[in-house]
Length: 353
Image (tube, rainbow, N blue to C red):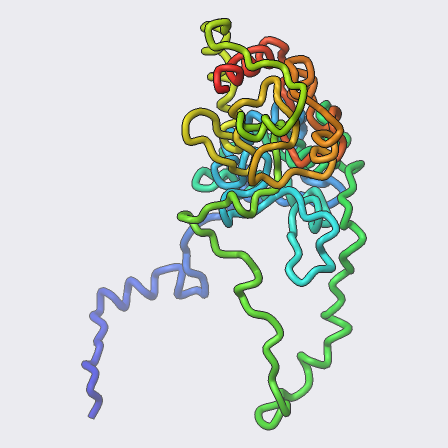
């Protein structure tokens, strides 16, 4: 005797089933998708640019859009926050045991970056960006990887001209033919392999975000070189610090507002510490590359050893175009475009001696 109760069909239910479209082999549910509905999902972009919408975006615009929508996870310069993904850096690391795989060092096609940003970002608000904003973000990511200049504009017209460094590092997936025997042969069910070896553990992959971590130790990008007054005493012939009384209060206030672009990497004021960039107390009029405990790039170290002092003129030149001013600097910031902003930031920094 079955332990399940019997199910019986009433005459009305039977009649209903006989008259429904499902009885003819179809469910009778839904309707064909409209062209515009299909287009909303058909977002893929090919390496040759097929599928890209018309539009364009500059590195300069990308810096602002990236700061608003992306920097909270990826850092202001695409350097990553804590263990959230790094989008820049990692050049020449692919042959190491623990390579840094970024858009610049690893990805073969720019279309992957554009498609992913367009389809899935920003986190929690996917597909909210306009095509021009996506172009701008991708242009800024290219710039952060030292692949384009700060005046570069990415568009659907020049997209295919951009070739990523690792484009030749991938091969066509031919497993369907080259490994066909794996899928057709009878599977091994016992005594298949003498030994099994563990070749890698997840601890070396650095894939798990840690919202409570401190990224200062692993930081790479650097900003303008800074010094504390204590470290500055080691450098001879330095201009005397500017007295706070000589400062322009309005200019300092404007500089504090502009400095928000720098706060992701630099601290100033009481208790300031090194982050992804050095702390900036005492920078104006002091030696380059002299902050205690911060690891500078080799060019910055050499400049400091060669006697470079951050006068207002030198700082202004650096802040306008860091990478043009000092080749090889780790600082990924594109630079301040307006002279008024540069003057204001310098005035603001002068207030932290």
